[in-house]
Length: 242
Ligand SMILES: [Zn+2]
Image (cartoon, rainbow, N blue to C red; front, side, top):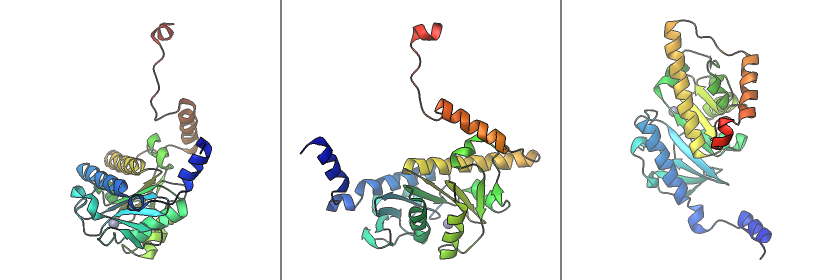
């Protein structure tokens, strides 16, 4: 078998029993929850995290203490929500997670009741673009109108608010972020919580300014030109001294 054929086979080969159980992904979801718990974003059993591999989703179980989560408290479902592996009932926000995967084809979803994000969601209709880092989430973060947790109405409200964004606030409830990878979705949750904290402090002093469209465009152009957010090797010493 030549390399090309092997690569094609590897891409389309059916998943084995062990890979369909997503054991690595279940451990990664547990790690992500413990990290978000240590950062103060996941309190008690509130919130849920998932990661998708193809048409399988590893998602936190309902009722689990997230800051102490273990891999066996992560359930694997298909995109219709049918349980594929694990013995615990998935989170009540399962439909929200599956909806994000179906509509946006992303790789991971994080939902928290993080304190700063939740506070902002109780007051604003949107978090304005007060800092250029918010452009990593798509700029202004919309607040999805309130609906009861675990309902299709909430899922639809959040999916609409996520249009063109990787973050949304849920009115009087919390926050949702997504990303191409689990790490990215977690980083986005941390970034949103930081931005909400900045907004609260700024608003306590006065009316926060925000970046207008032109300023936002200039940042996007600069970020593309400098490949912002990635490391770069330093120039050799003789070049630096020139
Ligand atoms: Zn919630």
